Image (cartoon, helix red, strand yellow):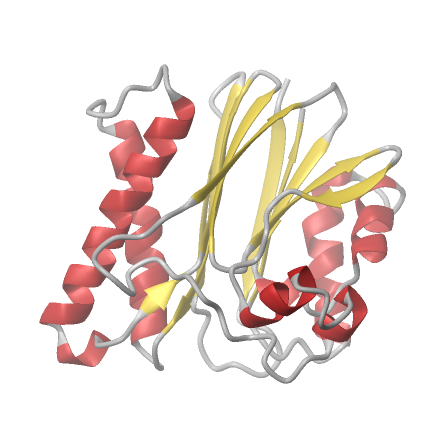
Length: 240
């Protein structure tokens, strides 16, 4: 039986929460989406909320073939991208807005994951933690090229500059991943307001050893808040 929990908070510094998330677990299915908006005081919130709403509606509409999960996710992301892009073009207050997106469609123990930007998906098991997604960011490119280490990336002054965002252009390319999970495995989706503050090993400890799973997202938020939480914080935890 799939179980899932989520939390979002504006953090300790920001005046508005520009993250948005959706979580639904109907039986042996799960759909989760996390978006982190950008583009100004108003527009970031608009971008993330519009992206989540459009993405979920596209998957639920029946116009997308649910038998092909990767195609369904990609097409839903394209519709969300178009909605955000069109709003940015037509509304001067939203000019230049965009959002990250990380999503998972889980059927039984088969997970299909989509990523645009630097919100992340982690796989967490009893034996360790691994990042499933690759950030579309300046510092991630530097890490991939061997110019800086992952540890240096955490403190890099350009760590918040992303190279791909939903809604920034007419078309967007999403990365897609597939995982076959074992009973007890967990997926963590989060915005960079969490991953920039809490280390992978701390995520692992809290999910596996920190206490009840249903309280885990709150514990992770509390850690981020205790360290100043300079950005919005969103976490979704799914256990199969």
